Length: 180
Image 1: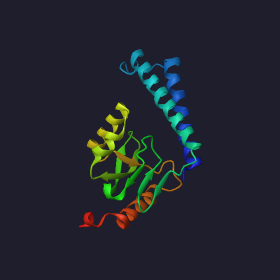
Image 2: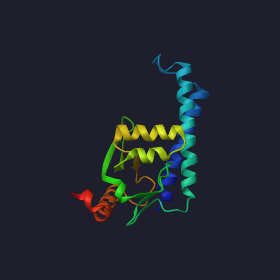
Image 3: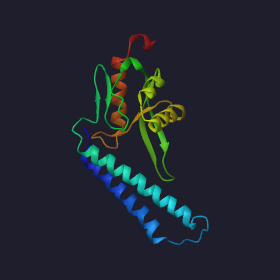
Image 4: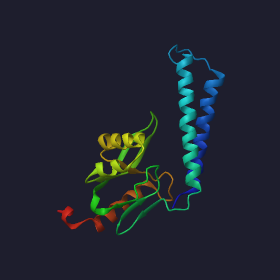
């Protein structure tokens, strides 16, 4: 299930990101580094913060009121409702491996994902009609091994439990020929 508490926390971070971006644009804070003190660069950074924070607010508010479960593991496959990209049911026979992927998101933090390695990632990338999303999925596939990754950030389960559950289901329901 989607965790309202975790979603609220992420929503607060997005609001702070928007406020910080607006502050950089409006207050034009001065620093000693001439590169960072560049008005154009600060405006771009501020606008990017407002845009990213605003998109986050939209996504997290939408997810908070979503009645569908965050992720479903069944004997048919995985139904992921944790991300913006909704692939629908991902059957076990399309999955070759499930593993953890860690991505450095800032100097101080890393994000852990459960990565679903597909036998034919192009099949799932081609389903996406939005060109920008399709490019992101293609980039994820090339750089991180798959277009499909999910996180426990908004779920009522921690990352380690989510990874173990996904691997257990894959082991149980994976097509027999692939286990060889």
